[in-house]
Length: 593
Image 1 (cartoon, rainbow, N blue to C red):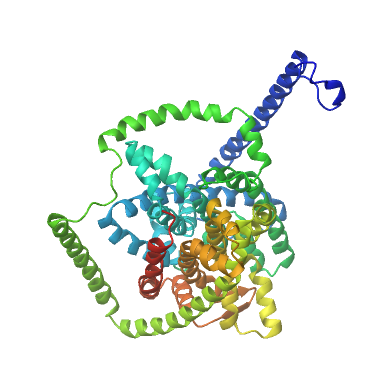
Image 2 (tube, one colour):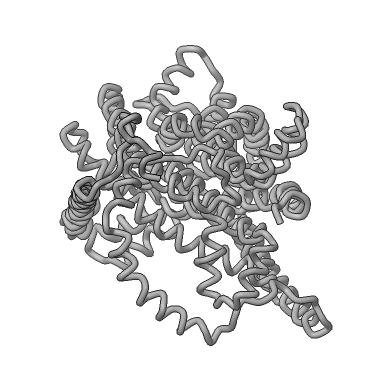
């Protein structure tokens, strides 16, 4: 056999000797050491930045109180960027924890779902200024004499712009788990804790990750409102990119606004390279039936992490925690059926539970009616309802147009990893970029071209909310099983048949989730889109967003409550009558199970 293979006749092929193996071993060890050094340096830099920022976040409030403005010195832009990013990712972590707990409770307990999902609709509909006006005083009381109270209020405001779409995504992923995986989890007798980390989270990883990206984009959109808090005739300013842009716009300094935009683009690109691209490449292993024919996503950062020993270090720390949680959750029982058939006792409990919820809702409505019945409360409600109808028409038009534009684009990006690799950074920049940074330029454009803000506000709202639809459609398209894609090629389906038989049914549920969150985000965005200011110029459109913004700014609690209540009625009503039936149909008809 050795005579048969003559390696001299194959110049590029020769048997590996012990010296070659030693060279390969040494080069592999060198690469691993280099990766360890890079990862260790990155971790130390991260902890160093956090340690440097924490004392400044907990500074005491001076004799003059919380500052109402910030410096517009360009040299402070890197520091402002660090402060904004720090707030953003603390809020993102809290949103992720909230999504896991809230979504799991709503998906696994039928009675809780009857309350939690409508409550989530209401929370999504409450604008960020509504949360701020109700909570900023509470946070400052919890942290007296420290700027940490205002920081907590700002982080909470960013949290309210991030959490809801992530929770919706996780909840619907739990409801659409493939039946065979659910049966496998039950047959292996996994504990609740094991099922959560081995099935629930991996199954939801791709759509949840894309919604995390979108949540960061939503947080950037409301960055100015959360760093320059104007409630109850008071303004609390925190160092950050949002407050910097607000001050520069007030002073009509377009050059400084442009520098803030450049800083923002750099920040978004760094976050994409260091975080989102590695995570999206890592999450590909959770796709169902991935074939070798599909080009895998790559990331230099992920390659360095895999080559280093950080995974071994994390496993060393995480294994004792996992074992502890296994023994703690074992008494709670093993994974069983989702919801057994309702018997007489279960029906009686359901009736009692619904009666209790009905009494609570009626009591809340009665208290609200008594509150608004004083003076001209009912007239104000009627006026707010009319303004709500105007904003509702804007939101409807925005959702329809954005769906027509972004569904085909999202499908193209999600089903083609090569396009996704190049387009994702651009999409990240557009989605994560706070579009209200461009409002000063857009305001000048509206004035120069005599564009009515009543129509222009739709454009402003879409700049921050259209990405919910795009990101959810991308997630839905990228999660289409490869076997189904190969089947369409094997059956030689034409383009129309592929769209009607595979693509549209596969992304329909994701589009519903994106539509709900986009519409809710548009209602929220109306408070900063229907009234825009640049210097001494203010453009105002009739709508519920303007009504709430004006009431919050002057501290009119009655009008603020009325505006928030009317907005909640519109959002919950549309979700109940339109979006929920569509989602139920998608779960029943198009889920991969």
